[in-house]
Each structure stands twice: as C-alpha cells, then as structure tokens.
Length: 259
Image 1 (cartoon, rainbow, N blue to C red):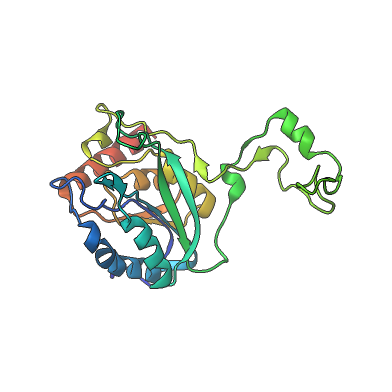
Image 2: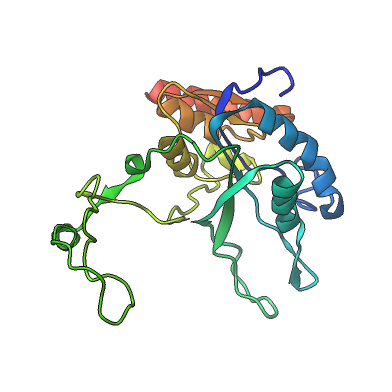
C-alpha cells in the first residue's frame, strides 16, 4: 500500500485474517498481538483513502473457553482513539455458523461490518440499494402531515415540510439479509474464509460512484474485485498467498467470459 498515492482510493472493503484461526491456510495472528499488527496497516489505509471515502471492516471475534474474545472490540476502539478514524456505524450480515450445541450460547447467525470514515462528508447513494416499497407503504407515505401523536410516542404521519426523495423505494436497515452461498462446488470454496458477492456489491453501490477506485487489502479469492468489476468501478487487491491469487484470477476470468 505504501506504493499507492495519498488519498487515491474511494472505498476500502476487506475481511482480514481472524486471530488464532485457520493456521496453515493463511497468516494467523494471536489475539493479544492483533492490535499492534493491524495498526500499521490501518495507518496506510487512512493515508490512501480520500476524505469522501469509506472503510468497511468485516471481522468477528471468536469464542475461547466459553467467552467472546475482545480483540475485535479493542481494534475498533484503537482505530478511533489512536488513529482518528470516525466510527460511523456497525452493520451485520446473515452468516450461519456450524450447527450444534454450545455451552451457554446459540449457534452464530451473523457477522459484523464496521464502517469508518475520515470526514463527515462522504459519498453516499442510499437509493442505489433501495428496495421496492409495498403498495400499502407507498399509500402511507403519501398521507398528509398529521403532526405529533397525542401520547408523545412519535408522529402519526409525515411531519410538515418533510418530503420523500423517492416514494417507490424503501431504504434498507444496517442488518443485511445476505446469506452465504459458497459450497464445495464453487471456486471460492478453496479459500477458508469467504463472503457472498452481494455483500461488497451493497457497499460499493451505496458508497461509491461509477469509475471510482475500490481497494481490498486482503483480497483472498477475489470477491471484492469481481463485485467492483461488475459495477463499473476500478479496483486494487493485495494478497500474499499465491494459491489464493490463482483462485481470484480464475474467478475473474470466469466472470469476464460469462459477461
């Protein structure tokens, strides 16, 4: 990343190695060493991201001896307090864990994505990821303003002077119902930690414009690259394991041939 120019990237979407996991598959870092390992990387990410850009970090801490490891939460706090990143929001996406019984816990059903920026003035296209509104919702939104409810619990209709940008699209929440689709028959299954194509697509649509640059500093099997390519964005990816570079190139070639 040191070879990239300052403020040359519009969006960063990545899922770095998880601490104390999948040794032999890729570089594994101990949870107690994770913050010191990631901070120099985060400094470079901060340097190359544009003021209007966003950084999305997909990572979830594991459980050890019956309790959740805190290194991910410590990392989020360090990015904010040590490097000055703005911690905008936390998204979740549907990722089912291994079925079974766990002492005092249920099986996993989601993974978090942490949203960081450098400024408050970022590229944001919310209606690019909007979903069609139901007919009854459109009618409800079109009602005239009725003011605050009498019991003070909220408002009964649209407030005065409040208008809708798009009356046919509803905006999604910060929980994304995007299930993992990878299985033993898909090329990316050769990588031990993958996410569905629709995941980077969502953030690329909502937080970049066509022709802008997307970076994945832990490219893995190339999912972020394919999503960027499909949406008309330029992309950069880094990966240290040659076997995963081969998988990414194979998947990109297959996508472009099908296109």
